[in-house]
View (cartoon, rainbow, N blue to C red):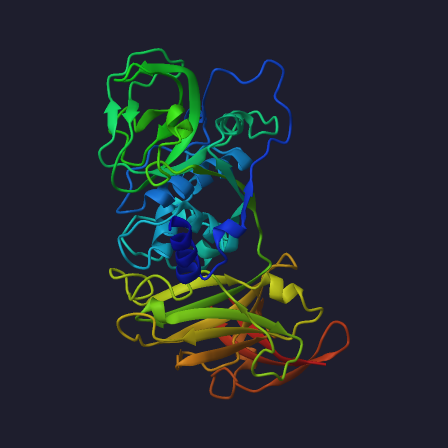
Length: 477
């Protein structure tokens, strides 16, 4: 039932392929070093690991998967200190509010990881203060988020030796290991908060019986083979994982406790009580080359879905094919675009690099805003602004939508075209292009370009103080 629910959530909430199709079984890439594994590893002491989280609402899965694991792996990749700056921590709240359908409800770690794979992940610095159901606004913030991506999602079927190997050196001989996420019930568990038995890692909270209700995601940051205790039936249990929770640093031992290996080994433990599927992640960075910048003012974000396209035909009013995007699509609840506290107008970025580079000489890009009835009420709104920014030449070049904006969004498909006629600002005297009354001329001028061809251009946005004027190509022959 859990797998079916996961598929439904991933397809319905994110519009993406199920995480099961993306996960791969972890296998160590190199043999164990001579002498085997050390008796204890604690990756939460490394600089890559962030401060303990005190989660907002039912966001435990994103706190574990994004706030801890994804943040740790990205800092490990980039050799950064997670505590040094909010720029070095990925926002679990951004992930949660993108996938929670506008409700204070839980979810799955894979949802956030797949969001990061398909779109990227926003930093805490860019997301800002945490609020329920908030979507951030600002092109630069979303452009920056595109940089941080999931590469692979790893899966372990309660293989304790493999989990320990991954925690030690990622299975490939690295100088630092990874961390893992898992889920289990969390209401009614028994934790000895005064554990004073043997340990090399020094924590004093030890889980001695599993919970029987609730659902919760947590993070495994290390292990300690020397931890041990004897249960009420006289059975000896040796060795434990180190778990970091997301209920604040005040909880248990600085947010941490020992989880004995034997709970994963016990065949009588139900999957719901303690999941036998544990996940890790590898991450990568990505630099988008062509990005759509758009501002939308709409009152119910559940209604909207987005598609992008590129074409080599300047005369087309609609693309032959289009790519439907995963992020922002029919998600976020029956709320204004930025959330209940912030209003209905939002500026976002959508990556169109793949479509732009699939055509040798693209002539225009398309955005399709698909409006439907996705919530308890039908929203109203408009596309306020749209342009495409191309970063491939080193100096960003912006192309502006040819349609009249703002434009009210109708039911169904709403196509907007961005022809590749660049807009840029050059030094010039505004008065040179003014009419007899001193107003900027709206005439079209024919100019000769440096390569000997001719171009039709128009001028706008004169700035007398800075002596600049904006030039837009109409045609170039």
